[in-house]
Image 1 (cartoon, rainbow, N blue to C red):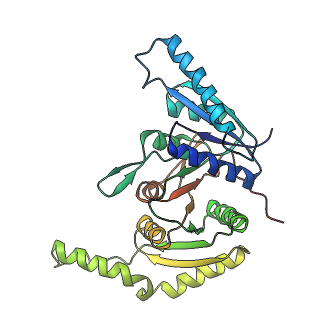
Image 2: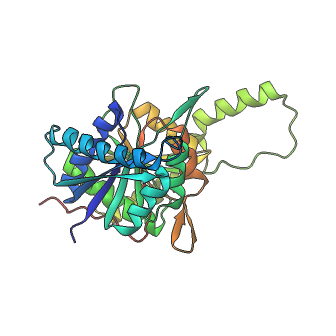
Length: 304
């Protein structure tokens, strides 16, 4: 069975962009695309069952017609189903041979933060394989790909995946390793305002003045040299909260994508995301590829 990418879509301008992005990914990984539209029962609960089923048929016909006019170069199929959106997507993932899921983050804004929607959160936690969450960037983006490093086995697979992706797209890789800051004294005579100002000052200079910096940059350099990376890349060592430093680099570089291995723990057949992964997803305004070394490993052919 040929490998596939699962792409949930809804009638929106964002879905049009995701459809074209899916086409690019499919050509990169040599896979087919399966577009999935869900007629959510929660939004149509007042309609009789016959009308809801009729709506599914009409939506599938409309989706197929829409896709046929998008000049897609990859092979694809499409289907529409009635059910709860997250449940239908997860059921389809488990039944198919999917490389990963590509979907909109369906984020909403509260104050200055972008938060994932309930469907995205459910897929992040319950999917058995990798998920790429697309976010529409509010600014012009570059081809750079940010790759956080923690030197784990799963992280090594992400480095290889990012390198091949970088070679195929011409994107520059930005590797970042974040080290926890040195512990501060338990007692402090600073007030809240002074403490906040001090923390902000320290966060801007601590990476270069921390005594651990030379050793950490040496360790990172040796690690990357062992990976035989062919893409153009830069490396960064920072000290502080990992998610915050990753998001800062993303904002400063206008990167197009973050590719990261989830700091996960397992629950039976699921790989559950850790706090850093969730924080980056919620705080970043950039698309995030969450790699799970699960049942459906992502494979990209190396460029010749």
